[in-house]
Amino acid sequence: MARRISKAAARRGSRRETVLITRTVLCSLGGVSEAELAVWEREELVVPAESPPRAASDEPLYDREALHRIRVIRSLAEDLEVNLPGIGIILHLLDQLGR
Image 1 (cartoon, helix red, strand yellow):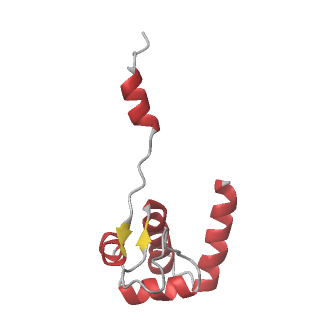
Image 2 (cartoon, rainbow, N blue to C red):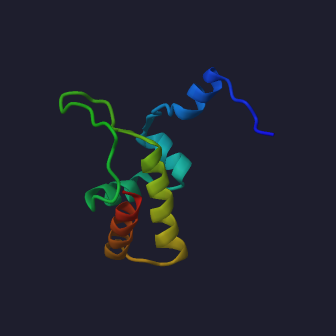
Image 3 (cartoon, rainbow, N blue to C red):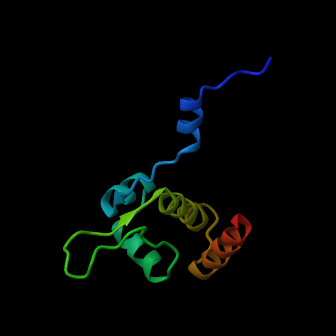
């Protein structure tokens, strides 16, 4: 027998909230240093979801996708010993598959 789902529960399940986190929290959750993240940003492997205006002193904010990417990058670099150009190619292919 099929289980019934209320309209409110269906709306909650289909709605994804955007959660933004700071660089410090991202590094802590992802298990990387801020220096590593800075290198990956220079190589354009990870980009913030929102960047503050140039005049603001606030740091950039990252979403769940950025957290997922740094975990993938860390795994490729540490576990599989893939270099940065190789990681860039792998991430590009993963992005193409996700479209």
